[in-house]
Length: 371
Image 1 (tube, rainbow, N blue to C red):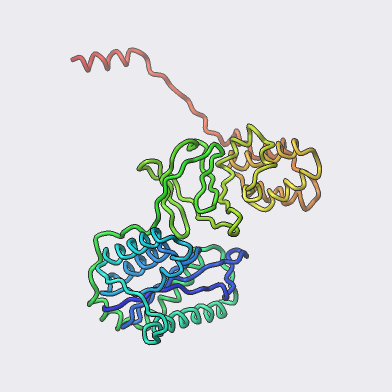
Image 2: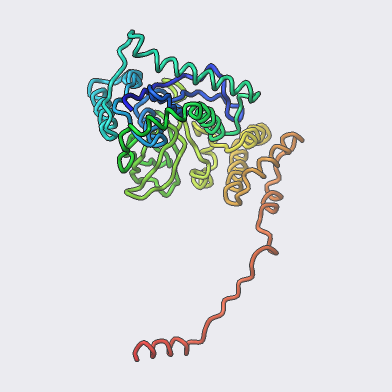
């Protein structure tokens, strides 16, 4: 129960994909030195305090206790490009995190083999285990991020089962956990612009238009943002990343801006995040086809109508399939036919009969209260 180690392992060389898209990620890796207990957590951004705090706390709560000392070099990368005040703030937050769990924070001394060897060796073994499991699986592609995270959890669980006796022995010597976790996020107060967006870390996020003009409290995690209005939770949005040092990223939900587009359909043509707006590839390809076949004004009006239909009739996937068929067969969508197809079926609507009671019943009720 003396020491736990934390670090990050770059997994890009394994070429994992999610639904065919490359997953640029790290693994946060925690290990108890004596028993070999391990925990791993998929990190979508780079090394950061937020990633370390989330991964470390997940590990400690899964373990059921805390070691006396926590050693990590993980803040070194997070310090890059920070000024002295920001570095001091980051160090203070890390020290407070360790203090919350009663751990003494220490850092590896670079170049001292016996201090770095244990953690670096375990990282290498974990990465090799993941690589072997991917080879046995026969594919590096996963349906979604949750499936890949389950895959990593299963690998680590198998490794821990092999050391179960030693882990149980060491668990008995660990410090008890506090009553609750401490914060593993950064908090920001951000205004919502007239275009129904806010910007955080060079990424534009859309939100429902009813929030225009409000200031949101945003909790920034490694893989998501939790949005609050005052003390009320609103929603969770996936975290985006900038495309490059000079290009912003976009996390867009067409349902947030569709009402604005209905008022000004031509705005679709000039949107910087237009490609991210389309919920599926068929919508994007159909807009390109419409632009080829008619004027920009008509193409924008028809495309906005399709997006409105997808939202209001809750038929996004089915409509995308029909648009894909139209594209394959070289025809344009028939808006009127689609509107009829996705209209509510009158036969399926319930018949509601409202019966009004006689007014004398209210008189009797009032007289009863008076009595």
